Image 1 (cartoon, helix red, strand yellow):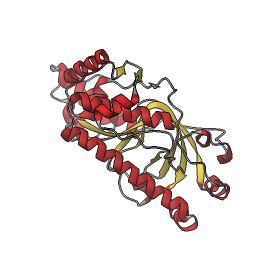
Image 2: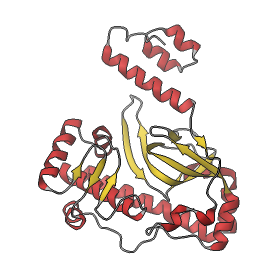
Image 3: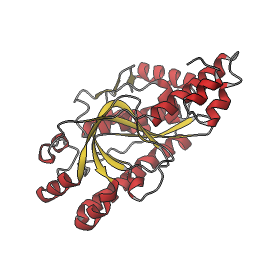
Image 4: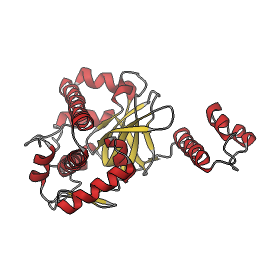
Length: 297
């Protein structure tokens, strides 16, 4: 589709704002790129490409039960969750699982991969508010038939366990312990957000980056995504780091290089390494949880 051709936009039934945006961009490269970005986001959200898993895990064979930081389900709970579960899907990098402003028909538990949760402003800027790891529950707002206040996007290609929204009340009614676990997960999400808010308001650039690196690695270690060498293989761009921490791209780049020289955090293109977790946690004021097993559904 040729950029600037409004009739082509209309033929593809694009939103009025995108159609309007195409008119002034013929001679403005930056504006053209901005419009293309909006177009790509729109097409991706309108036509999700998550793939149905032909042979989903049986709950008794769920790989999450082998993770040291996650609490295995009891036998009775596994039987119920097996009935509660409606399937599994695969999501590629960049795909949206939950879309801001919409009521999602399903909830998900992350089995594999890492996801980002963010909110978007009207002008296209976004704020990443959290990262989500295996065992995390995605789309809780949908259970209460509320439009999602955020988008959840795949960062590392992932696999998700899917649950029907309309079955959520039976989980709360028939298994109060699982209902308590859902409440606990929501409370832990709030705790994580508080830590990130403190970073934005009080920590300097180095402290923000170290805090984020330690937090990511701590979550990865508890979900079997990182090894004992304190290395997490994850492709986070500097732009995504900047979106999370409220820093400019230039400031982010300079801070990453400074931390690498100081030996606190080694932030490469496709991996994060924190050589000394205790030292880094002390530097950033991060309190690592001790012997805490997270529940999952």
